[in-house]
Structures are given as C-alpha cells and as structure tokens.
Length: 214
Image 1 (cartoon, rainbow, N blue to C red):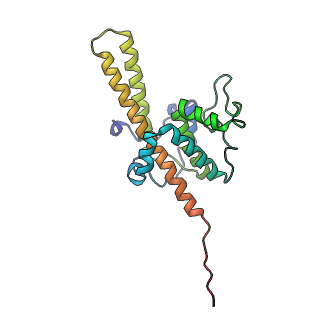
Image 2 (image 1 turned 90 degrees about the vertical axis):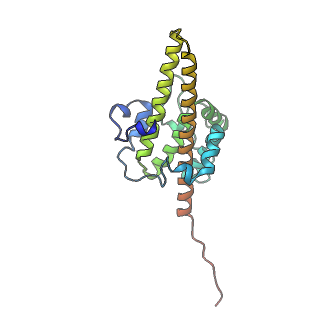
Image 3 (image 1 turned 90 degrees about the horizontal axis):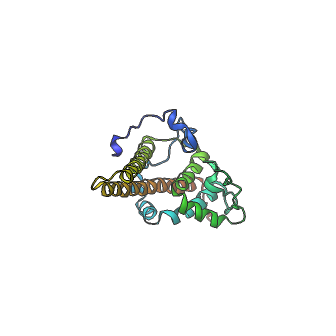
C-alpha cells in the first residue's frame, strides 16, 4: 500500500487546511532528519516498538523532551495544546485551555484524545528549530495513512447504509488495518524525532577536557 502512494512534492490542495498548512512551511527545506521514517524501525527499534505499544503515554514524554531540548530547563512552561500548530475549534483555543495551570492534565488529554496531532506536533517542534524539511518517506507514509483512514471511513459508512452480507466484516478488517498502520507510522515518526533529539544533544554537548600534571 505504501509503495503505491507517490512521493511527489506536496500539491497545493494538500497544503490547505490546518494539518496541511502546518507541513507546507517545510516543503522546500533542504535539511532533513538524520534518519527517515522508514529507517526508524531499524535505527531506533526500541523507541519504535515502545511507541507502538504505549503510543499515548510516550507522546507525553516526547513532548516534554522536545520542549526542554529547545528550551532547556523550561519544564512545561512552553506547552500549549498541539503547540498551536493546528489552531482551535470554537471555544477550544490553544493557549486558553488552562495549559499554564494544568499542563500535565492538558497534555494527557491531548495525547489520548488527539494522538495523531500530538505525534505530529512534537515532530514539528524539531522541524521548526532546525529547519528540517519533508523527505520522500515522510510524504509517502503520511499519504498512505491518510488514504487508509479515509478508505476505512468510507467503508464504514457504506456498511451502515447497506445490508449486503459481509460488508460489516470487511469494514471492520479495514478499520483494524488502518489502526495498525497508524500505530506503525506514528511509531516511526516518534522514533525519528527521538533519534534527532539525541543526535542534536550529542552534537551540542560541551566537550570535556582532562587536565594533566606537568
């Protein structure tokens, strides 16, 4: 399925909307993550597996890690819902939902109720900080996940509107497949971000000099 998704640059229509516009700013950046999302399972297997098994709790840790990488020692002081990358809805606006007083509770709600945007927001923190663009794997896997989710939704709607024998089972299988792919891709993006944070911290770490007696 992933191989069928093109790696062509993002089209104008894909850059529209809250989700598309958040990635559009990185479309032409030449710098990239040290590893691609497809390389993440082999280069960072523990983080990839851990992210898939405990996807929501890991996002809480990763957001704290990313924020304190960009703003060392800041704790949760720079946290807002999805870091404001996707805007808000009606009365729910990032920065006005008690993030400053209850950042832990807000981040838990974000991780468990808006897992996809939570994963992407943490990745975008690193893209913003270092001007990292989208590679072919990013484009292919994100497109694949979106296509599967839309296809599963369409099948579920068809299954509810028709009385064909077996359509419910087909829709259920497709939903499970879409969920599995979502977890795998989210794990890849989380592992990619975690690897980048560790790499940047090693690069920026102060050198230790040992003194010798003459």
